[in-house]
Length: 319
Image (cartoon, rainbow, N blue to C red):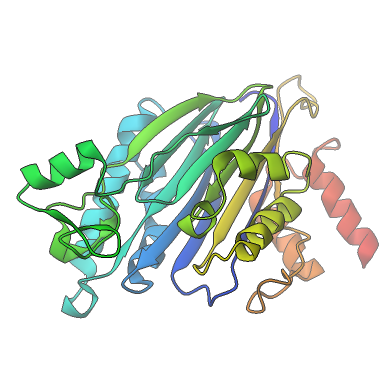
């Protein structure tokens, strides 16, 4: 895998974080180090979002073509996870659903997939680029797909599938499943020196902050925790009333190689985070918790030049 270091911070917003979930996972698959990041915004309760958080990435990395045909594996994993969720649900949870915005790093490829209106935006060469499309029922192609399947779109405060749901693709939503599919749209980006950072966020951010504004706001902020806090604070100041979850992944290159001449990939995220002033329900990390997080999440943590190793030494000095 090419030389790159990622730094990520996920923060949840001012309301109780009962319906929005994040998942970050670093794993090894067929000799490749892969990073998986996701934001899942539930509706009709938390059940669907929580299920997707716990199962989507596991289904993906177990897919036999995860490395050889990653796009097909992502599509299959989305649909399989949706199918299994629907099988697991009872009538009391028939309205539960969830969006998903995910980013999968495999080698020097970044694959972004989504259903619903949680959005992914990258900063490349200083420019804001949306790498996902919000799935709304009034989009021409989405509306046509829904109507071809026998459904309808109507205005009820906003455009809604069957007058009910404001997104046209999602996990769950059993009663609308014929029309509200979990087929992801997937976009691939190359990880190179021009790729600065990625933002994954729920619609509570994007309803009040444009892609360009978000990128401009946090481009000078190297600490992803502070970047995520800055975005959330701005969204609240602009009147966002929704839950907000924001994941910032910063790509940093040329951090040194392994002793054998190969590349080292390290991942640091949230290990020294304090509770956000905007969120009274999130406990701060303790030193011991941070150590456990580093041990679990960092690759090559004991390599002398590894940022993970440096962070661990800093933790030891704090004791």
